[in-house]
Every structure is written in C-alpha cells, then in structure tokens.
Length: 182
Image (cartoon, rainbow, N blue to C red; front, side, top):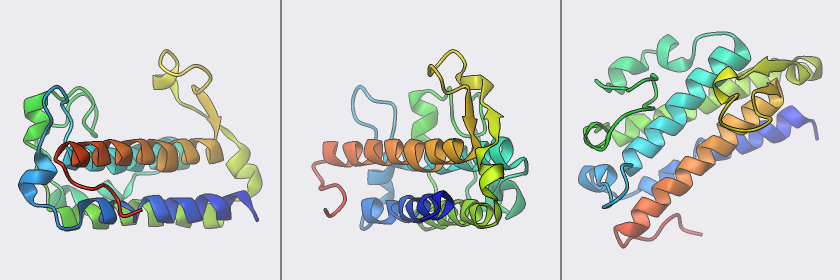
C-alpha cells in the first residue's frame, strides 16, 4: 500500500470521527469548560481542524486552506482567535465564548480532510518526501522543525487532530458522559 493511500484512509477516519463524540450533545455541553481546564469540546474540535487546515494547506501544500477558499468564515464565525487564526493564546473566557453550529463544524472537518486527501491523491512520492520548514516548532518539539510533506500531514491531520479529539472526550467524561462508542 502506498503511503499516500494509508495517510488518506486515516485522514478520512479522523476527520469523520468527531461526529461520534458530539452526537446528542447540547450547545451548553459542547461549550462547557471543566474547573481547572480552559478548553471545551467545541474549542478542541474547532482548533484541531482550523489549525490543520491552515498549517497543512499553507506550509505543506503552499496554498490557502478551505476556510479561506470555501466560505467557512461566514459559517464558522469566531470573533476572537488569539495570536493565531486557530485559537492559540485565547484565555478561558474567550474559549468559552466560542459557540458554533456543530453540524457546520463537522462539515468543515470533513471538508478539510477531503481537501488534504485530494492533495495526497495527486502528489508524487518525491513531492511527499520533500521537506518543509515548521519554524514555529523550533523551540517547542525537538526534531519537528523540518519534516517531509508526508510526515507533516501525518503529524497535523492525524496526530494533532487525534490529540484534540482525545481532549474533547476527556471533557465529555468530566460531564459524566461516555466518550466515543468503542
């Protein structure tokens, strides 16, 4: 199996999976923040896909993301985004103010995944092996300031996304609710 096919299958799954986490939840539950934690399920999901969109499209593919090209700003309006377009640096109150239509957020997650998969379907092995610079990681994660395009896609569209999906399930558990039905 080619690496791009394996990546694509995982991206399809991780960009569909949040549906299982949010099914049946109210807007208040999605925006609830546990004591001692700033995040909410809504923020964790929005941040996961919004950051993947910008980073993978911008740094890996060298083009604007689906947020910019498919009109998602109107569908997922977030007034305060912090120091990045995807919520870094927001405080507890600002995170708590993020209230989005969950169906739109799920559709956005799938759109981001579909766009990345479109790129993977057309990229050659040589293109996927080319390195890209991730300068914002130079002082954060050792050895992650330069990755191949395939590694960067896996890191953000699978690893980073699944990290935040786990965070959303943790918050759901703090509400006394069951996580994903596994």
